[in-house]
Amino acid sequence: MEAFIPPKKGKQHALYIVRELLSKEPKGKGTAVSSALRYFNNSTKQKSIAFVLSDFIDANYEDALRIAGKKHDVIGIKIYDQMDKQLPDAGLLKVKDAESGKTKWVDSSNAFVRYSYEQEFFRITEYSTQTFKKAGCDLLHVKTGEDYVRVLQRFFLSRNKQNDYQENNIFLFSMILAQTIIAQGDASIKASVNKNKILLGEPLVLTIESYFPSGSKIQFEQIDTIAHFEFLDKPVIDSSSENGDIKVIGKYTITSFDSGHWVIPSFTLAKGVKTDTIPIDVVFSDFNPEQNYHDIKDIIEVKTKKEGIPWWIYATAVAFLLLTVIFLARRKKKPVVIAKEKIVVNPYEEAMQQLTDLQKENPDTKTYYAELTNIFRLYIFRKKEFFHYKNN
Image 1 (cartoon, rainbow, N blue to C red):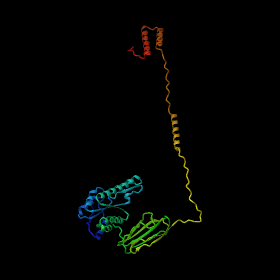
Image 2 (cartoon, one colour):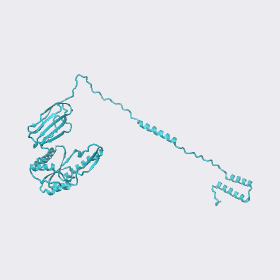
Image 3 (cartoon, helix red, strand yellow):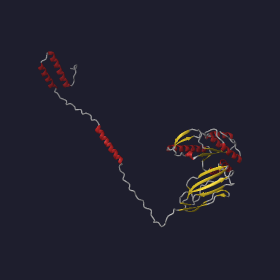
Image 4 (cartoon, rainbow, N blue to C red):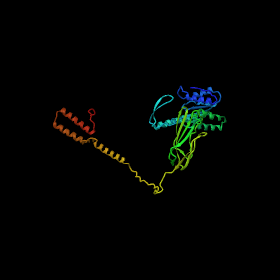
């Protein structure tokens, strides 16, 4: 809580509040809607109309708002800027939180980053809207740069149809929020254009210069419609101040799609202070009627090629085939093992041949029986396919 001004009536008190708002330097940082509402509930006992101005980038103020809404007529005004809603596509940005002082690099060229930034704005807006609605309080959304006086007037006029006691608050609150107070005195206004003859749809720049001496009390209404003309872009407003005097220059880019002789009406600043009317001729483009007439040709059909298999598919297939051939050619061949032909021997004939050879050798008795035993073993192995001394 930075400061508290007790409520009073009168124009001087309203101007005092304006001065305090403009000159007050906050000591702390951050947004604490709940703390401000609780202080208001405890300090203000009499029922009153309370305006809460904030960006409402905060949370957990539902209870304090509900208590204030039961006792007072609370009207919230959510102020936001276009930059709060939409992050520009400007590449890598170094941003700083105005409240916490923290800095961070943000890639604004990333579409997902910009989408998330926008969704966060909608989340905060929806949260504040639902919170005020549940508390039975009204919430206005005012964008910086727009005519907030008209927003407030529409709001209070709509409420006047239901509540007659709020008539006097239109003037009071409009006066408190007014940023540019201008007056009659020696005020002047003039309008000019860069050309008085344009083609259909050709841009035309309308310049309005207004001068207001210090201490004046007249507010110039913004221009939003001109008969037979359309606005092509947002107006560019430039203001300067010197010794309390204010000079405002507004440039409006307009055009017309209605051929004929039209007049930009005068713009009134105050009684007896207004601009002159400006005549504008809107014509078609010039042409020579003596030239040959060329009719519009019929639409020429363009023959499209039949869709076939793309060439790169053929190239890929050929490359794959060549690689396969090279791989198969360079692969080492496994040696072919030639199985030896198995010689089939008759066990009986082999044994008889060995006995014949043994008798011819005529060895001693011990050698004879030893060789005879071996011949018998070999015969059994050939015949029964086992060879074991013990079994034999």
